[in-house]
Length: 212
Image (cartoon, rainbow, N blue to C red; front, top):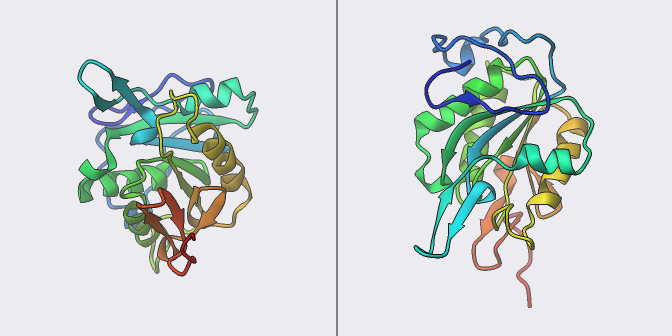
């Protein structure tokens, strides 16, 4: 099992064993991690609002354990998947090194479909980094479909958009052609054609009309 910031989450599907010493750039076309079998969808978690806990006493949030495995189990999802914890951070705290780590993990998994849970504030920035690392000329994994998803309120909240978003993204990652995408607010976006509208608290295309 990987040591350090990345660790395998006990998931319904068998997790892959891999070496902690492989430190290579995503552009080096590194071999996939050894799996007992290649899962259909590799899920990588990076923290963000979707996994946050709320503490009444301190009135603040803290990133907790990933919720996507629980959500998929409760929904009866039967696609073969694996969940790996890569980061547990608010997306505003992510560094360029963190984004490179996500790109490396996406490139090295044996699955061709990769779903990443991520905070919404810097999701677009991470998606652009992944697109450059994986799909630009000489990219490390041009054959992979990568979908980033998050939520605007914690998955533990009853009224959260997390369950819908995860279901939508799980379907999207299985049907979209190779590339990097964001799945939010019931729409699929490309990294270069999306923004987070902080006032409306939603994702939209840059030319989207303002609400009246």
